[in-house]
Length: 208
Image (cartoon, rainbow, N blue to C red):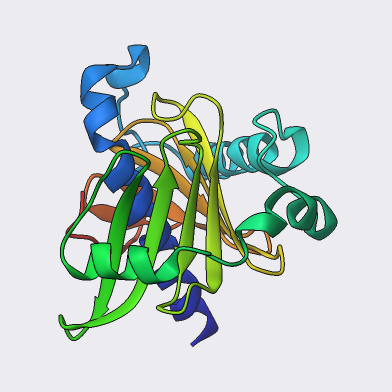
C-alpha cells in the first residue's frame, strides 16, 4: 500500500510538472532532445551504475539546490502554506480556467465532478507548483531546478511539513529517473512505460 501511494504521488508530480512545462518546452527545444533509451539493452551493472549516478546528482551533490531539509523548506515556503485567495482560485479551476494574468492552474477531480485538489504555478516563479485542497490548505509543493522548463532539470516534491515525497531527474520529455522519499529508485520512465532496476516494465501512463 505504501509503495502504491508513493507511486501515485510521483505520477501526480509528473503530471502537473509536464502540464505546466509543455508550452515552454515546445518553444525552447533543448540541446539534449536526441537522447536515446538504452535501459533494456545494457547490463545490470550498467543500470546499477546509472541509478547511483542520478541518485548522487539529486541528493548528494544537490547542484540544483532543490533538495531541502525540513527546516530549510519551512523557511522557504511557509508563506504558501495557506492560499489566501482560495475561494477565487477554487471558482477558477472548478470552472475550467487553466490560466490568468498571474498564474497557471491545474485541477484534480474525484469521479470527474468533485474537486479533490488544485495546483497553482505563479508566473513570477515558474520553478514552484503548489497543491491545495478546496479550503486552500497546502498539501504538496513541487520545486524545480533553474533549468526548468528546459532539459535536463530536476524536480522534487514535498509535503507541507517539508518531508520529501519524490524526486525526478528529467533527462528529456521521454526519459525520467524517479526516486522515492527514502532516496530509493522507483523506476525509469521511457515515454508511456516505466521500468524497474532490472529492466522489467512495471507501470504505464496516459499523460505522456
